[in-house]
Length: 390
Image 1 (cartoon, rainbow, N blue to C red):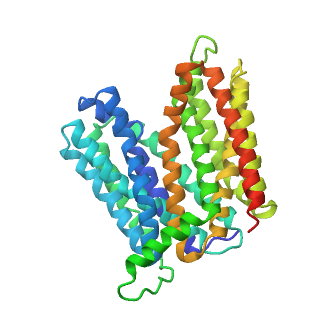
Image 2: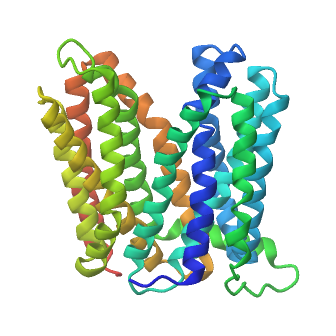
C-alpha cells in the first residue's frame, strides 16, 4: 500500500521518541535505580509507575485531542519526551526517581491514544494494514531502544545516557513540522466540559470499546506474565535452558511480530477483524499449552514464532475494529479508554501469575492462563454475535 506524507511523519516521530524512551527503560532504568539505593520492591514500583500514569491519563488526553485536535498534543507529548530525560541529572534518591517517572509517563500517555487515533482516522480503506505498519515501527523502537541503551551503558554512566536520550528525542520535532491537524470539533462557548463528559459517556457506552479493550487487556496480562515468569520456568532444573536461549525467545517473538504485523493487518482488512482477532487468540492459547511441554530448544523457538504471529494478527485487528465502530469526534477518547485497560493488563499480568504460581507450579499456572484465554474467546464470540454492527 502507498503511504501518505502525514502517515510517514507521525510514524517516524513515534519511532524516534519510542526508541529513545525504551533506551531509558530497559536496562538503563533498573541499573540507575539500583545505583541510587532502591530496594527490590521499590525498584519494581519505579519501573511500573509510568504505566500507571497512562491508566489514568490516556482517556482524558484522548478526549481533549478529540476536541482540540491531534497536532498540539503530539507537540506537547514530544516536549515531555525531550525535556524529562535531562531532569534525571538532578536525581539523587529513589523517591525523586519515582516522582520523575510519574511525570515522564505523561509522554507515553499522550502519544498512545493520539497517534493511534491520528493514524486510524486517515482513511477507512486498509485501516488494519496501516495500523499494522505503524505498530511495526513502534515495535521497532522496543527492539532498537534496549539494544542501544545497553551498549551505551558499557561506555557511559546512566545519567549521561539519559542526556543522550533527551537530545535524540529532539529529532522527533522535525517530522512533526510536516503534520497538519485534522478538523477540530466546533464547541460553543460554555459547552466544553459538557462535550468532554459526553465524549466519555459515548466511549464508555460502546460495547465494541469494552469488548476489544478488555480482550486486549487480557492478552497483555498473559504476555507480561510470560515476560515476568517464563525466564524462571525455562531456566529451572525441569527445563534447563540457559539465559541466552531465554533472551533469544523474546527477541524472536518481537522480531516475528514486527515482520508479520503488516501481513496480519492486510489479512484482517480482507477477512474481517473479528475472525482474525479470534484466530490470533486461539494460536496464542495453543502456544501457552505448548510452552509447558517443550524439552528442546527448537520447540522453544517454534513457540516464540507462533506467539509473535498471534500478536501480529490480534493487535492491528483490534485497533481497526474499534476505530470502525467509533464516531470520528470521539475516536481518541475510545483509544484512551482501551489504552488504560491495556496498561491495567500489563500491571495485573505478573501479579496474577505470581498468585497462581504461589498455589500451583509453573506448568499448571501457564495452562490455567491458556484455559482462561479459551473461555474468554467463547464469551467474546457470544458478545460479538449479539452485537451485529460492523
